[in-house]
Amino acid sequence: MSENKAIKGWCARRAKAEAKKDTIPLSKRAGSVVGVVASLLILLFFVVHQTSSTGFFTSKFGPAETFLFYAPALFSLATTGAKAFVGRKNVLRPFEAFNLGLFTVAFVWLFVVFPFDFSHFADVLPDFLQFLVQWISNDIAKVLMAIGIIVTPVMTVYTAALYVFVRRKLS
Image 1: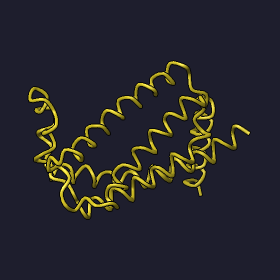
Image 2: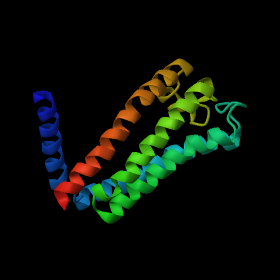
Image 3: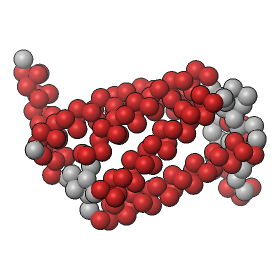
């Protein structure tokens, strides 16, 4: 019984703290725009891989894999941009929870299919920058994806619950 009270107390404290920080300051909103631009550049990196046929995306990278690879990232960009525009966090938490769920599905699917060859990951970068990502192997990528498979469902539930608790505090 006391454990249940401790969890409720933690949730209430967390919701109260998040409700106080629901309005996003202009500086963080500007930072979100910078994050969107950086994310677009990373997406461009993968689009160049795909359109240049570098070998990074293998023959297993079909329409389903393409959707699951790009959709969560694009949805995340839209959510971040909307947060910068709206200036409130909790309003967009349901979309964040949905996106995290989509990331979970994508991680699982892409882990099982694994349509990548990381020996070609650095191929689209100029020679002087290739060392930055050349160390990433298929095994390292799979470990990172496995971590994503574990973390994203937890974050999905946490984000959805946080939305509910913060919404109660704000109303």
